[in-house]
Length: 445
Image (cartoon, rainbow, N blue to C red):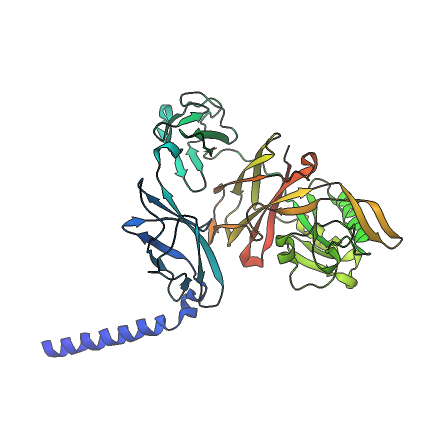
């Protein structure tokens, strides 16, 4: 009898083994054909910190470490490949970029940075506490963000933080000084050698009342300074905005395609991101309402966008986006802090994109009557702060009041009129074909 049982177990083991192997041979069943992540990055017992959202890996080494010839051991997703390969020595004096390729051919690029600790250059916030509340902030060292979720009813207008920083460094505002945390507060840590790092501290009160601002619709107007039909299309869109809802429709002019190429005195408004968005189209004007393409080139029909814009305005608002910014006139440095707050119970794969837009630029534009040398270009897209497709922040599901924090910084080009520059931030759902769910707009000054 025992022999029979043993044989039965052996047969079952073989059967289960065969099934496991069969599953492994069928990555499409598991969804693994699209997996392309660095799961672990290790060098000489130093395990890197992997930030999946920013695709940054940080290796912390003690002072004196020679990082010019390090051999990493890298663990990646099943069925994926990586270049440079695991086990291949690299010079990490400067960041090294690794490309992970999924089985379906899609890729993800990671930046790996080796940080050698130097006492004179240390400028980190090691801990940030509100002692009176017995609450300690969650520190994201890579993004330099510190987040608090405090109990409902907490008064955040005069909180006193206790801050621990790197040895020999200083912080401003200082530890022990009360601050109003109704909006994010920036703290600057200065190392012994004078270099600085800016941390953004964001405090959210659990269950706090959120006043939804209403659904805001984004119209991307793909245009070009040498496109003869584009001025009429832009005028129609702006008139529609005035007629339907001035405050809840935003039109962003994205110059892309052949007719946006700068020739002679025509302006150069081309951007890498705009060109990537425009890919596979061959003429302007092209409108997209919340990422749904509606008109294309010579087939442009003015009335095509009326119904989609009206329908989009009537959609349920699923996210509230709060944008806070600090602009330094002298340095033209812009610090941006964003909160994306879910308003409903919702399944999806959510991304956020932050854009810079400049309004009222005068330049040459082709029109049916000839070249208008004093044309007023409206809301010209100047680029993104986090890439053409932004960054993912939730892959599966959000619940009401789920809050996500983002921080970005950039220097505004000296040729841009800062008085006419806007931040335009939108959240979109990849599962719905990149459909934009909500847009927020704010001037940088």
